[in-house]
Image (cartoon, rainbow, N blue to C red; front, side, top):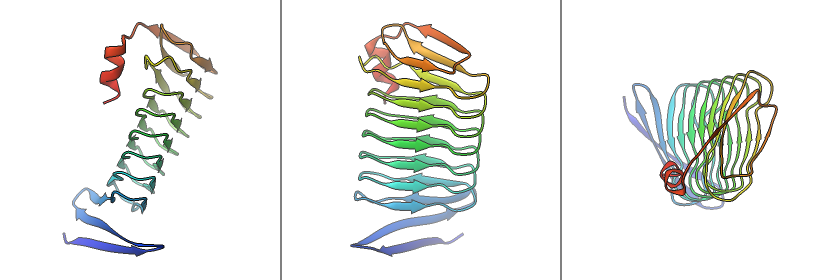
Length: 187
């Protein structure tokens, strides 16, 4: 398949490399603030630095935020979304998604489906949404995370040394996590 180069003109000219591959399209953002909209098929999207907005659209997408305060949307499909350092908003939307925060005060919404959600260090908000979700709030950062599992048969994991708030969770399991273990998880 041939690669494509799309040039967007808004306030400034931004080049966005798009390469078609057998399993979908690959989008690579710039170091500035980008808006990237995926295709109806499976996409691999790397937002890079800047305050980016990414919409994966339909398909089983893999979306990676970079440094900055990003808005990352999965769309329909079973997506993997990982934020970057910064205060990100991650929304899996429909599908059975795996959503991971990174350092920063993130808001992560699972949406419809059976989702797995991990937050990084920071004062984070996790919303599971409808479905049987698995929520992780294991950072050792002395920040209060708010975890709302939502409707469904949900399981949440908490760090024994933290004072996180859990609501609508059918089962909360406490684990002892050292700061070193939590730091490894933020990578």
